[in-house]
Length: 515
Ligand SMILES: *[C@@H]1O[C@H](CO)[C@@H](O)[C@H](O)[C@H]1NC(C)=O
Ligand SMILES: *[C@@H]1O[C@H](CO)[C@@H](O)[C@H](O)[C@H]1NC(C)=O
Ligand SMILES: *[C@@H]1O[C@H](CO)[C@@H](O)[C@H](O)[C@H]1NC(C)=O
Ligand SMILES: *[C@@H]1O[C@H](CO)[C@@H](O)[C@H](O)[C@H]1NC(C)=O
Ligand SMILES: *[C@@H]1O[C@H](CO)[C@@H](O)[C@H](O)[C@H]1NC(C)=O
Ligand SMILES: *[C@@H]1O[C@H](CO)[C@@H](O)[C@H](O)[C@H]1NC(C)=O
Ligand SMILES: *[C@@H]1O[C@H](CO)[C@@H](O)[C@H](O)[C@H]1NC(C)=O
View 1 (spheres, rainbow, N blue to C red):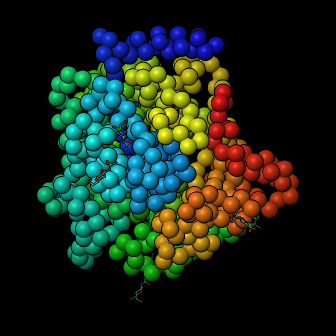
View 2: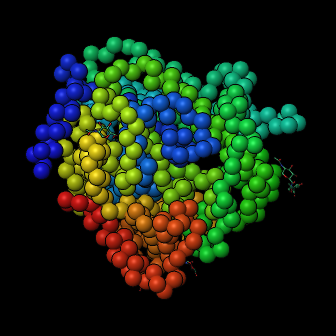
View 3: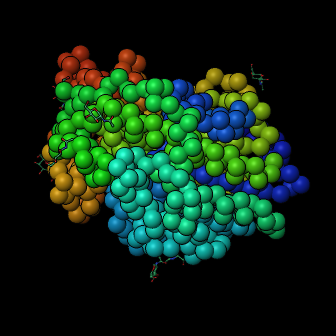
């Protein structure tokens, strides 16, 4: 069986290796992008370029980030390690200094003969990547950052009285912007410049687009694709009455923008008025169309020997459960779009419903390019090169051979920290610092259920106390995909909860076949 698979893989890959040359990799990460893409069944979306790429790619409908916050999620997928292994739940530490000299995806490509380059936001900036995007280890030359980054939160959004504000809803005219540009446009231009050069080695190019992260600042022409009367709000825009307080993220960063602050929304449970929710959603969709357009331009410069991976670093709530932003364990905050295009593997859209995780990207890219033997699964406290995910390649081969999907992961795992059981401004309960973390929400998602336990957490030993449980949530995806009804007090669910709890405590190793 395994030999058969290896043989098949070899045959497929020999197609990829044009002239015996290793394929290039274009690795595109989009900040805060949920699956608001037409081909992922979002009717509000206008994303023609991603939809066209998907027509010759694998798309994963059930892909999840490990934590709904940029820094931890990015370090997690770039090292194929989970937040608990990285001791990283905030944006204040660099893994090589705190836990171990773990290898990153680009570092492994660089060490195996690739030219590696980073453009825009790939690593989380600042201390998380040692203020250098982990340059000396991960990249062949200095990472590129747009000069207009420094105007990220500037007061450049003109309100109806002509005043300049720092708004969340911020369609702009590029010619009015500082330096007459925007960061993602600079990122695109740097990407095009890189792709237009002739490289003597295969490349691994990582491009990180900032939008649709807030503020929703984008060229206003993209609003034309999203007339307000076509934008629909989610049905579940109330806070579920049985949602535990600890699970609630009070979207402080959204409330701090000038336009939202003017609405005087009460802390912590106040609701966004519907008419403003519509404006936010409209601009999120328009900012996504903007990024789709930039990605389309970038893709015109790749050759037919380039693997393309496109995904979001985590999801984003746009009113679901009465919430905005990320900072939670709900599907809407943790589920991401994932598109993988492998040249010559498929000329049609291949859709997967399997549960996959962003920690799977590293072993998958190693197997697709065969730059080294497949990665081994990390044992506890392993610091050498290894993975806490699995390669998706066997599943992808099954899919193109029309084999029935075989479940390879019985569950995926996400987590989110809190400083206390009640939402707070100080400390910020959306983004607590490590030293403030008292509670960890551990969440397991199977094909049928999401089960979350908020338990006591020791922030110096990095250990949960499973005997001290503050709150439990249980959602049944068969009937309640939106995760509106917490079933955890229903007596008939007792048995299922006992099983899910056991699975949650055993963790990811136990959920993977052949381990
Ligand atoms: C970390 O790993 C890199 C690359 O393998 C190596 O060059 C470096 O010496 C290591 N650093 C430490 C402190 O072990
Ligand atoms: C991180 O940056 C500091 C300051 O430049 C440097 O001294 C240190 O060696 C870097 N860490 C690693 C692991 O390279
Ligand atoms: C918000 O509060 C401020 C100060 O109390 C007040 O001037 C303003 O009218 C309020 N706005 C709304 C929309 O209630
Ligand atoms: C939303 O509705 C309120 C109350 O009807 C109104 O005062 C406000 O101007 C509206 N806001 C927008 C952005 O349309
Ligand atoms: C899989 O099914 C599709 C659609 O039915 C068909 O076009 C394709 O040739 C099949 N592939 C294989 C390898 O049998
Ligand atoms: C875990 O929580 C239980 C229940 O509150 C408590 O008795 C126990 O001491 C805690 N264990 C640790 C290691 O803190
Ligand atoms: C979950 O929902 C039940 C009702 O179904 C509710 O009674 C319970 O308090 C909720 N769980 C928590 C921990 O709040």
